[in-house]
Every structure is written in structure tokens, then in C-alpha cells.
Image (tube, rainbow, N blue to C red; front, top):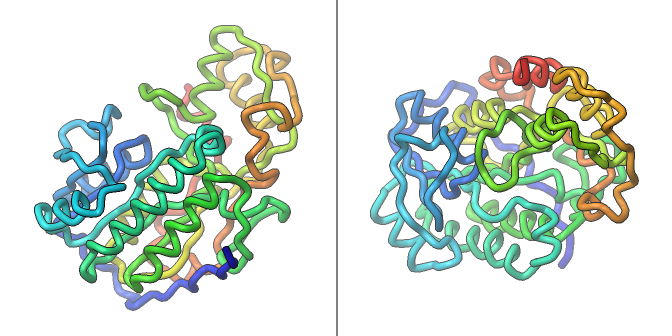
Length: 312
């Protein structure tokens, strides 16, 4: 499959857009729940739709309806029933290791789901939450103009989903770096939560010493989505945190915050671990976000400051 450069960001208006009356969030995981909660708190009628009912506490009180995003007729019927003013797509499995072991299922959900969403949009704006894994991880950080070359099956499926939606000319792709926050439930807590819990139990952790991220707080992701969903912007935009950090350094900082022995963190090469398929440097920065004045009041917080406030 030939590589395509990301579409440049195309803001259609410099004025702050009014919040849409009704937003359909397709997906029900950790990020989707925070997005739905943010939109609801801003007075937007929000509907979550997914194959399984959401379990995150942020989704409580938000209307949910079933859809299998791999079914074109189901997605079309969902759009007809909800009649959203805008759509946020956060669908598909995000467990990178699982996707690497199940590439066909990952492709069918991410790419196939995006294709079905695109076919049913009928001109509505759509915002797709995508990933840093569309890059090979050879550069220290990746801006919107960097050449995509997915590092793994998850990245390939997400890049294909991006292309399906960008082809509609009404899509904004928001690529986010490693998302974190305190996660009370769910089958696979994010890095901060899982490391903190393991350390508080006195468990030793093998953490890759050759993997870097620009972690972004889940509330910052939700704030950007809520700001951009009805902005009229199309193209590709990156959201990474302001600090580039290795997993070992972050884990040791978490140990300090919970009062655990930092020797419990065992630096380990990615090879032979669940991180083997991840890019060495999964870091993002934006070359275009400064062109959007409405984002300046939603600057991402530093991961070390946020870790301190989340744990204490």
C-alpha cells in the first residue's frame, strides 16, 4: 500500500465554533468515556454507540445504543436514528499487542468501521482519534508533515481508517500520543495506573528502557476533541504532551510518588516483551496547533506534574 502524506490542517474559520447540539461518539472505551463526559458537561446531547455497553464511570448517565461498526447497514441505521450534528470516532481495539496477534480483526474493525462511518456521514463533520503508531519511531518526535510508515498492525489499521475518513473532506484526524490518567476500571488500565498499582503491591516490573513517549492526559484529549469537533477544521492534527520521556524514567517517578522502592523497576529491552511491536520513539508534536487560537487555553499538562496530582 503506497504511503500518503497527512492532509494539511485546513481551518475554515478562525472564530470559535458553537458546540454542536448532538454528537455521536462511536466507541465506549477509556478515551471515549472521557470525551462523552466532556461534551455532556458542556451541554451537548451526547450518544455513545458501540458493540458493548460502556463500563467506565465517565460514561454513566450518557445515553448508549448498540452498533457493530463493521456492519454497514447498522452504522447507516444508527446515523438515521440519532441524526447527529457531528461524529467522534474512537472505535476499535487499542491493545497494540492484541492487534499485532490479530491483524485481520484489527483491520476489519478500524478500517472497515471507518469505511462504514464515511459512507453514512452525509456531509457531517467527523473527528477520528488516531495514534502515534502510524510512524516508524525512528525520529525523536513526529509532526504532521512527517512521513507515515506504521510500526505495527495497529498503526496500519488506524492509518487506513484515517484515509477512509479524510477522503470525505469533512474529517479531522487527531493523532494522540500515549494517553494516561487514573483508571478505576476496565480490562487493561493505562501505563500510569497499572504501574502505580503494581508498585503499591510491591511487585517488580520489567519496563522497556528503549521506548519513549510524549504522554498526554486523557482530560486534555477530551478538551481538544470538544473544542475541535465543530470547528470546521479538516486534515491532520497532533496532540502530544510537552515532555518526551522514557518509560523507565516515568515508572521511577511513579515509584517515588507512591513511596515504592525504585529498584522494583527493572529496565528491560523491548525485544521479548509486550512492547516489542511498538515504535522506539512514539512521540508527537504539532506544527499547526498554534494556528488554532481556541486551543491555546487547552495546553497539555506536563506528565510529571500530572502524575503527582493524580496519585497524591
